[in-house]
Image (cartoon, rainbow, N blue to C red):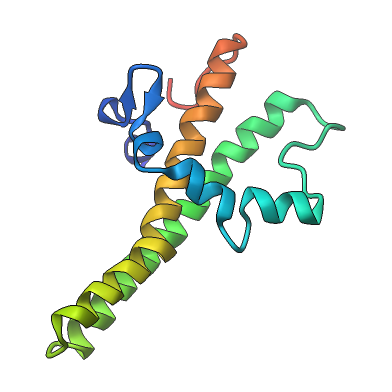
Amino acid sequence: MKQYFRPKKFELYKDKTIYDLLGIKWFKKYLFTDGDLVRQWRKVKSINSGKNKFDELYEAEKETKKYEIIHLIFVLIFVLIVGLKFRNITPLNWIIILLINLYANIYPICLQRYNRIRIIKVLTRNGHKSPYK
Protein backbone atom coordinates (compact mmCIF):
# COMPACT_ATOMS: atom_id res chain seq x y z
CA MET A 1 0.00 0.00 0.00
CA LYS A 2 2.92 2.34 0.73
CA GLN A 3 3.94 2.10 -2.92
CA TYR A 4 0.53 3.37 -4.03
CA PHE A 5 0.72 6.49 -1.85
CA ARG A 6 4.30 7.37 -2.80
CA PRO A 7 4.27 10.33 -5.22
CA LYS A 8 4.91 9.17 -8.77
CA LYS A 9 7.32 10.75 -11.26
CA PHE A 10 4.49 11.56 -13.66
CA GLU A 11 2.84 13.67 -10.95
CA LEU A 12 5.78 16.08 -10.97
CA TYR A 13 6.43 18.51 -13.80
CA LYS A 14 9.47 20.78 -13.35
CA ASP A 15 8.75 22.75 -10.15
CA LYS A 16 5.00 22.03 -10.30
CA THR A 17 2.72 19.03 -10.18
CA ILE A 18 0.21 17.74 -12.70
CA TYR A 19 -2.40 18.79 -10.16
CA ASP A 20 -1.39 22.44 -10.61
CA LEU A 21 -2.08 21.98 -14.32
CA LEU A 22 -5.49 20.42 -13.51
CA GLY A 23 -6.55 23.47 -11.49
CA ILE A 24 -6.31 21.91 -8.05
CA LYS A 25 -5.55 25.26 -6.39
CA TRP A 26 -8.86 26.66 -7.63
CA PHE A 27 -10.68 23.54 -6.45
CA LYS A 28 -8.90 23.73 -3.08
CA LYS A 29 -9.89 27.35 -2.62
CA TYR A 30 -13.60 26.88 -3.37
CA LEU A 31 -14.24 23.42 -1.91
CA PHE A 32 -17.49 24.01 -0.07
CA THR A 33 -16.87 21.61 2.83
CA ASP A 34 -13.27 22.38 3.72
CA GLY A 35 -11.79 24.75 1.16
CA ASP A 36 -9.47 27.65 1.87
CA LEU A 37 -12.30 30.18 2.00
CA VAL A 38 -14.36 28.04 4.39
CA ARG A 39 -11.30 27.45 6.60
CA GLN A 40 -10.59 31.18 6.66
CA TRP A 41 -14.21 31.99 7.53
CA ARG A 42 -14.26 29.34 10.31
CA LYS A 43 -10.74 30.37 11.46
CA VAL A 44 -9.42 26.82 11.13
CA LYS A 45 -5.63 26.41 11.13
CA SER A 46 -3.99 23.53 9.31
CA ILE A 47 -0.97 23.35 11.58
CA ASN A 48 -1.26 23.65 15.36
CA SER A 49 1.37 26.18 16.42
CA GLY A 50 1.66 24.62 19.89
CA LYS A 51 3.17 21.38 18.59
CA ASN A 52 6.32 20.54 16.66
CA LYS A 53 5.47 21.60 13.11
CA PHE A 54 7.30 18.69 11.55
CA ASP A 55 5.42 16.17 13.72
CA GLU A 56 2.24 17.92 12.56
CA LEU A 57 3.34 17.51 8.95
CA TYR A 58 3.91 13.78 9.42
CA GLU A 59 0.41 13.53 10.90
CA ALA A 60 -1.04 15.58 8.04
CA GLU A 61 0.65 13.24 5.56
CA LYS A 62 -1.09 10.28 7.26
CA GLU A 63 -4.39 12.14 7.05
CA THR A 64 -3.99 12.57 3.29
CA LYS A 65 -3.82 8.79 2.97
CA LYS A 66 -6.92 8.29 5.09
CA TYR A 67 -8.99 10.77 3.07
CA GLU A 68 -7.71 9.40 -0.22
CA ILE A 69 -8.79 5.87 0.76
CA ILE A 70 -12.24 7.15 1.73
CA HIS A 71 -12.69 8.81 -1.66
CA LEU A 72 -11.35 5.74 -3.49
CA ILE A 73 -13.94 3.60 -1.71
CA PHE A 74 -16.67 6.04 -2.74
CA VAL A 75 -15.46 5.94 -6.36
CA LEU A 76 -15.76 2.14 -6.31
CA ILE A 77 -19.19 2.24 -4.67
CA PHE A 78 -20.32 4.90 -7.12
CA VAL A 79 -19.13 2.89 -10.13
CA LEU A 80 -20.76 -0.29 -8.83
CA ILE A 81 -24.09 1.38 -8.08
CA VAL A 82 -24.24 3.23 -11.39
CA GLY A 83 -23.00 0.21 -13.34
CA LEU A 84 -25.50 -2.21 -11.81
CA LYS A 85 -28.51 -0.02 -11.24
CA PHE A 86 -28.51 2.43 -14.14
CA ARG A 87 -27.56 0.48 -17.24
CA ASN A 88 -30.00 2.15 -19.61
CA ILE A 89 -29.43 5.84 -18.98
CA THR A 90 -28.89 8.54 -21.55
CA PRO A 91 -25.44 9.85 -22.49
CA LEU A 92 -26.34 13.21 -20.95
CA ASN A 93 -27.13 11.52 -17.64
CA TRP A 94 -23.81 9.65 -17.81
CA ILE A 95 -22.00 12.95 -18.29
CA ILE A 96 -23.82 14.46 -15.31
CA ILE A 97 -23.01 11.42 -13.17
CA LEU A 98 -19.36 11.53 -14.21
CA LEU A 99 -19.11 15.25 -13.44
CA ILE A 100 -20.58 14.71 -9.99
CA ASN A 101 -18.12 11.88 -9.33
CA LEU A 102 -15.28 14.05 -10.62
CA TYR A 103 -16.17 16.82 -8.17
CA ALA A 104 -17.08 14.61 -5.23
CA ASN A 105 -14.31 12.01 -5.45
CA ILE A 106 -11.69 12.38 -8.18
CA TYR A 107 -10.66 15.96 -7.44
CA PRO A 108 -10.51 15.27 -3.68
CA ILE A 109 -8.18 12.32 -4.43
CA CYS A 110 -6.03 14.63 -6.53
CA LEU A 111 -6.07 17.19 -3.72
CA GLN A 112 -4.80 14.61 -1.20
CA ARG A 113 -2.00 13.58 -3.56
CA TYR A 114 -1.14 17.24 -4.20
CA ASN A 115 -1.02 17.97 -0.46
CA ARG A 116 1.13 14.89 0.16
CA ILE A 117 3.68 16.08 -2.41
CA ARG A 118 3.77 19.52 -0.79
CA ILE A 119 4.21 18.04 2.70
CA ILE A 120 7.06 15.79 1.56
CA LYS A 121 8.80 18.74 -0.11
CA VAL A 122 8.67 20.77 3.11
CA LEU A 123 9.93 17.85 5.19
CA THR A 124 12.85 17.00 2.93
CA ARG A 125 13.78 20.65 2.34
CA ASN A 126 14.14 21.04 6.11
CA GLY A 127 16.34 17.96 6.60
CA HIS A 128 13.60 15.56 7.70
CA LYS A 129 13.14 12.19 6.07
CA SER A 130 10.36 11.42 3.67
CA PRO A 131 7.78 8.89 4.91
CA TYR A 132 8.61 6.92 1.74
CA LYS A 133 12.35 6.36 2.27
